[in-house]
Image 1: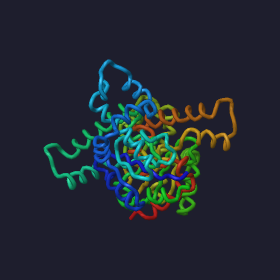
Image 2: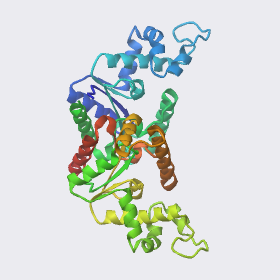
Image 3: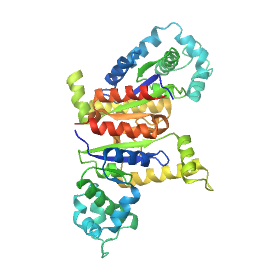
Image 4: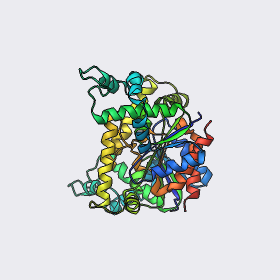
Length: 202
Length: 202
């Protein structure tokens, strides 16, 4: 089946964001990374209202049902933590972005949020620890912590966040249509494989 | 780096064996599936001797050290269970097959056994449950159990076996260089992606 939307889940330092950018460029479609989705969600006047109106029809029904259950606390946050509130706004934003047409979305557990749409190709970009350690030092510079420690901390955070909001296991190949190790395949080649796949699927 | 050997780990019913066969054909290299590896291991006169001589130098050192520690039981099986003994013979067989040159090896945890060779591309073929259920009924016919129950039983066995002999998690994308969902990508297209990848890596 034809796939017009691409989600990119990625390990920190694997080059997943760059892969996403290259895919969006090659397919000439909008590119939304984690920060952009967050910004759109917070800037959009409709977002909290959208969340209130559409919460029950969104994925993760149990979580939503819990989040939107009356808890005696008035206001749009309705008793949710800031993190949960932001997550729910972002769910709405990602569902809306997907409604608008072809695009590439990096991060924000978009693979889970869009799991029920059949026009989405779900990808996972990962890489060996050494490759990622070398890459984050080149891109983001040294810090007090060793690059390996920084990677392990980020990996753990993403794992916990993903498990919390989706109930699934981060990095499980079954969650994705294609997973690529950029340390072996290369960042540009990974993007090319995904682009060709999108073009060839009917 | 150039990859001349391809391991294919696969979910039952995903078409992974067919993918492996197509890859071997396209690259014109030998194809070893699980049954063939088992047969070669058992038929080879050298196998038990090989296991005895090379056990300590094989991967999974802890397991091997345990398995080959004197346990007061004479004979080549040296106190191992038949399953463990076969596993160790097969480790030796797979290491030897890899030494002989380019090939495709399906199953038998070859991804783990050959993890220290840099000339190996590790792939994982999986698919949605419905796709696999439909496929096993077409290929192997109906049985008393429902196709879904058969798949879940096989999945569980492979998971437990893999965890037991490798200490790793079955289906974790990080174990592989590329993972493909044949329900989305297609069996032939998955083989083509792997073939192109092997050809393009330098």
